[in-house]
Image (cartoon, rainbow, N blue to C red; front, side, top):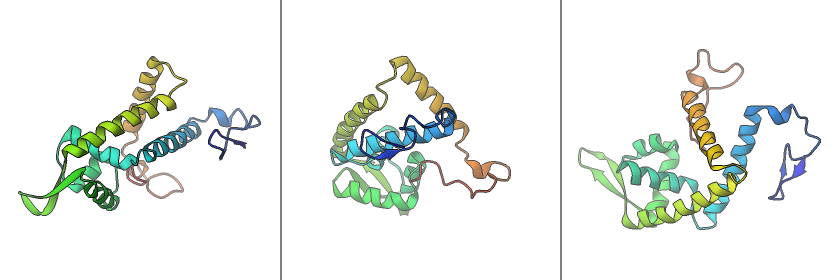
Length: 179
């Protein structure tokens, strides 16, 4: 096991890693996801942001106001975590919660003008981070990668728990997009 660019130990960075391990798609996806998460989390933290803030602001900006439950479904963030995310965004003035006129027991979340400005800054950072992450790929390869990842995630969006009998030897999967 070798030391990665971030100074931490990462399996597979050592030249003695068996080739067979370097050809297992699930292992490669997990490693790439780990690299992506570290890169994006660190890059957003550098400007005082968080990936969940970005997801919620994008969902509100692009799909319009929503209840907390609808935002959880749109973003894949657990409902219990959504409360804390919305509290942080509301504290900064990026979102507003108002009672739902159709059902006073729930709130409708709306992005504010400062939230839209914040989203523009986060968007620029996320796009720069994507460029860093995908630097070894051409524009066509990046597009192909996105298409393949969309196909994979769409195929597996029902999760192992939805498969007949679930996965052997394991508990049902957590909801997609959870922490």
